[in-house]
Length: 459
Image 1 (cartoon, rainbow, N blue to C red):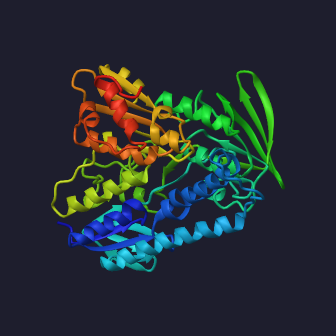
Image 2: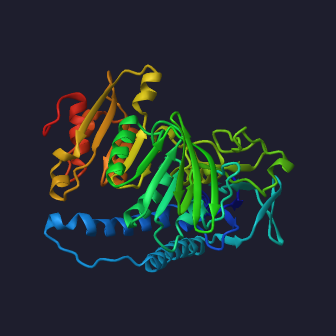
Image 3: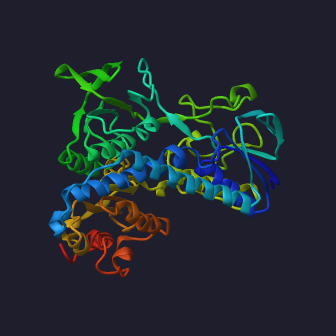
């Protein structure tokens, strides 16, 4: 059992691990270079982006949707400064909340840059910390594009895109993944013309093709301009914007914009830890190699979250944080990587868990695909949010739920039901015969489940 634990990184993986380890009796110290705990997620990622997404969505609804409900809104305007102020208040409240939880659980927090000296010592600023176990939870940073320099003024990372103090006329998003589409949604709803440049032939390439296609159509209706199968030849910034040269099979073309967001994914953040010096093994992609118990090749040094392979998601890091804390306390630990949900917080939201159809086809697994549209869901119709569907994938012979793919207003919340069903090895019939409250969006899951083994009732 590890009685003295040092965790490097106070993001979702690190802070959750710290609290759980302290609950189990360990003495825990957390070291992070950020002044406030919470990591990228709380300080400059998940939370501030969702706050701005909510604010921009409310503004867009007031402009375009409320008249259908008999509500007339005149003279509506936006105050970007107030939006940014309120965003900061939310972030501060949550990070202070983590600080309170640290104190409540006797977790020590040190604001400093950390270096690993050896398997049992960490340098934290001017202090040398001794530990039975060292856990690396330093997260990830935006992936850079060679020859494109991010200055956070004209050419932005996701961090800079959250802090824009005005509505750009045109913004180019390099990359069609979830981060770019979410931030593009914020500024698009507020009035920007959003161009998305994606080298592949579809957006959100990791999602089930049905979701990608439907989301593409929805965002296009909202004014997004997509340049698929297109590469960036050059980006030349100037005082008031940037000139892009795009290339695809039809040749090259120029695009003038006010801002450029570079959003082509993230990479593990391991710089400055001196991992090479002490011999911690990395993969060719820069991830820290770990065994099933998150231990590196160096005894008593562990790693979790974005620095190890797997989906770069805050909730995945949290699950790993709890698992390693329990392992170090002598308990059994397990993370089911087949049941890690993913959510894109656009409007409509997109959520998925488990296998996609192409994955099942590649693995030669016999399956049924059953869908139910929100246009036939009574709650969705009542609140005028009928875009999207629920699709369930189930084993053709056993009925076990193998995957779920939802696009609709409440997709991010609804996906938890299917993730839990998969964790408990439920079948589509189990879901269908579970009573769901009426009228709710989640009845669409029930109907899709009925369609998976019999026939939907309301289709």
